Amino acid sequence: MQAWLLGGLVAAASGGTPADGDAYGDWGVNLAVIVATTVAVGLCVTLHYEVLSWLSRRLGGKDRTGRHHRRQVLYGIFGVLSVHVCEIWIFGVAFYLLQSISPSFGHVHGIAAGSLVDHVYFSAVTFTTVGFGDVIPFGPVRFLAGTEALTGFVLITWSASFTFLEMGRFWRRD
Image (cartoon, rainbow, N blue to C red):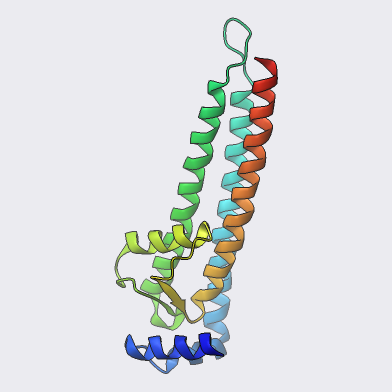
């Protein structure tokens, strides 16, 4: 109850309109947010799968002496970090596009409307489930934020499992 009241007060203080709360009743807006969320999740999961598959094949090779090197784990780490940054950008662009198309999708308090980099920052905080609290989503776009947190958690866990398996493989063989 307090979070709902605080959210309403923040929306009112930030110039939010009464339509912010009414957007949940507009199924067209909700469907558009669900579609954007589905596309972003689909892109991220597919990208993650392809990058981990590629890394697994690439890291599985041996050098000229036939020995595996622990250094390959570093290549894996940089590969995993790079794919996570790309995934954060995918969600950041989704937030940015939704907010650029129409205010009926909601807004993220604490972010300038036309700032892509701020939306990517919000995406990074959400993807990693850090949630500093300096930026807060309102309206239907909250579905995208909540789903991004779940997706980020799953993909980060997947990367940790992949890294653990690769490290075990290279540490045992050297």
